[in-house]
Length: 263
Image (cartoon, rainbow, N blue to C red; front, side):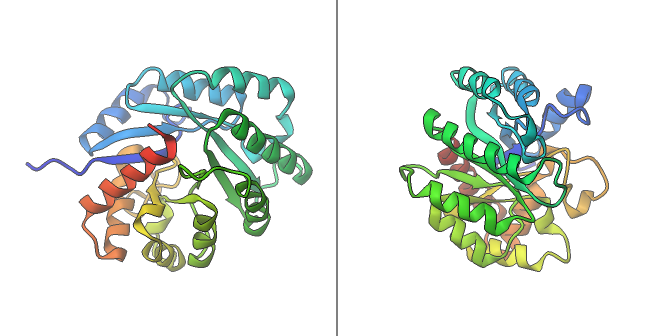
């Protein structure tokens, strides 16, 4: 039996309660599916602590620190100081996920903007890339990132647009700023033609893939808990729309993720 191509799930939530005690089996299935590296994402101070704790358990897992826009109302100087301390750990590879979410509006817009801009400044201070969440706030997010990107060095990608949900034009605008574009399970959904068009149009060195596990399961696993092993479905979909082999997509997207997170 041939080995599956080596994959990098650049965005998961391995410490989510929905995975819980099943984590060893989830990690075993990921390994069997060829997933060699995973980044687990922080969404609040406590969540970031949990992400880092999981990363420290596994040689092939890294963590990010961030306050999600849902929790932006909880951002404060104490959280910033704790993130600064935690970022000394070599397992920490980014600030995120951060950004704007005007769909659920679980934090006031003013708090979302304040937390977003403060964490971009923190990423500058720590010289770390950022993981961006944007939902129903494409132009607002882009405007903030355009100003921030103009101040950044370009030796590496400066961040990633997590679970990209826009069109090809927006994807290219973000890439021009220095961001990578991440595709998740929704690229496999039958109605998401614009996402597939974006994945087909970008240069291959602009693309990374993710699961957002345990959420956003790809079409073949729709309605079930997502996990990193399923990132292969996203790789297969992008390979199909680009006319490339799955191995080529896996190799280049993994190399892109390594550049992004400086692993």
